[in-house]
Structure formats: C-alpha cells, structure tokens
Length: 413
Image 1 (cartoon, helix red, strand yellow):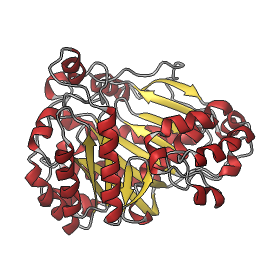
Image 2 (cartoon, rainbow, N blue to C red):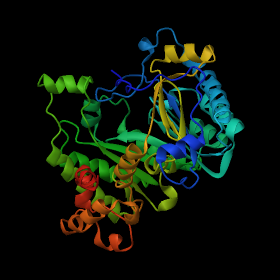
Image 3 (cartoon, one colour):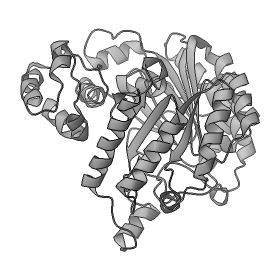
C-alpha cells in the first residue's frame, strides 16, 4: 500500500504560489544565493509490487481504468501548467539543472515516451549546459536499443535497481530480475555513453554478511560510476511489515545493518569510491547525483505526476496520489496538488541542518548557531565528527558519525 500524503493547507486550483519576495520573508533573512531548478518526473507504474515498498506505485490491476499509454501526455500537460504557474507567481525563468525520472518503474514505458517527456521539459524550460538527466530502471525492463534511445534523447545517467546479487535475497524482496543480467545492462548503458549507478539494499530478512559481500563484490566487478546503499526500512502497511508481525520473517537487525554498512564503506573506499552522502558513493565529484544533491542542499524542484512533491521558494506541495485522480485534474486544467505548506524560518533551518549534516563538506560551521557550534568539540571528541574537516570549517561525519547521524543532528538542533 502506498504511504499516506502529508496533512497540509488546501492547494488552490490555479496552483499559484507565493512569489519570490514571500520566500525571502519566510526565510527571515537576506536572499540566498540563486537556487538551481530541477524537475522530478514520477512514473507510478510497476509490473508487480515488491513486499517492502511503500512508494506511490500501481500495478495494472490498480489503475481504475487509467491507461499507461496516456501518461506521457498528462505529464507533459503538467509541465506546461507548471511553467505558467511559475511565471504568473513572479518567478524568473530558469533552465533545468537536473531532471530525474523515478518511480515506480519509468522504463515500463516505451523509451520513446520517456524521450517525449524529456523533449517537452527541454522545450518548456531549456537545459543548463551541463544538465544531468537520470532515469531509474529495473534490470529486466531495458535492453541495449532502449538505453541507446534514451542516450540519443539526452539522458546522461541511468540508475539500476540492483538491490542484491543473491537470488534468495531478491526473492525475499520480491524483485523480479535475474542478478546475472546486471553485467549486461551495465555494459549496454556504458556503450550508450550513460553514467551508471547501482542501487543496493542491505539488511533484508535472512541476508547474511556473506550474502552482502557477494553483492558488494558484484557491484565492484561491474565498475559503476556511482553506488547507493540503503538499509532496509520496514514501512507500516507493507506486505513485509505484515510478514514480520505474523512471525513469518525476522525483522532486520540494527547491529547487522551497521556491520554491513561498515563493510560496504571500506570496500567502496578501497576501490576509489568517495562517500559524499551517508548512503551514496561516487568515483569523484563529477559522478555524484546532482539531482539528489539538489534536494539535500535546498534547491528548488517541481515534481510531475501522481504523489510527486515539489519545493519552490518557501512552499512545498504534493500531488494527488492515484493516477485516476491525477488524470482528472490534468484534464480539467487544474493543479494536481492535494495540499501544501509554507516553510517558515525555524523549520527551514532545522531541515537545512538535518540534510546538510548527511552531505560531506556541505555544512559550514559558521552557519550554525552558537549553541550548536559549542557541541562540535564534544562531537569530535566522541569520534562522530571529523576534526581536520572542522578545522577547515565544515562539519563532516566520521564513519561512526554516519551510523549515528540522527543522534548528531539532534545534538546540533
């Protein structure tokens, strides 16, 4: 079951936003440096629902008559609507710095439809000269021709949901791909000129350290440009949560997950991958996910599609969840937003510290309030914050600090 939407204020049917001056007032400070502008396109379709997943995704039997084949035109219509809202709300025109197609499984749609949506985004806003364009993909939903079509259309990067190299772990997660397919899709993507990221999940019920080492080794054997590794979180309302409650499977162990993280970080670091966010490693700054960095450092983005979230100026909003409700709003020429909230100065500061603490080199010590700066020496002494980095003026987590990142944030806020 997809997770619930937040509770917020009603969103107007015309979608108009408080203008840039209101955003400055909400921040209660001088204007920030100009923010990059990104686009997220949610493709809410999956062939099957994985038991651990609470994302806003729908299988064919859950669409209430909505056709996947109509989705690209609906998303393009929201792009046109978005450009009109931003202009009418007083925001200056900005080219897109990043575009990210997520899901769901974007690559369930024909490649020509992803290309059409990307072309519409380019026609609507234009692209920055070095724009990053990513799609997520399941390993069993693409072939060489599909990936070449994406590259020809302007995609620069693909993120494959590998999750594990061990069939029994994939079976527990209810993933459908064959792990032997990973080397093929990585090679096809590289041949097309795309940067490659491989995404892993660790701490699946029944997964051992030896299983995890097999996945780490498989990632390194494929030499991607980027790796993400996320601890499995058991979300309420999912099939996995019900299985754990009924005793069919054992809940993930925090201690084992910590051991798995340490093992992955050591292996990735020894192979030339630098951690730049708690769950992300890249072969140098050029291969970091700039779209995700935009979320973490507070840039603006518009989210297209059912359940997508957006953040512009001081306003965050979220679209209606079901594709049928979304299609109805788009057909009526109305905002698909279900609700929104204004981020005031105190909330914005809390989010800034929470997110930047996770990003290497991003949180400048001089931007912290005095009481938080006084905590830094103790955090260094406890091995949670890197001392040499602090001398250079940034708060960087140590390996121990990354494992206890939430505790560090609480100390700073």
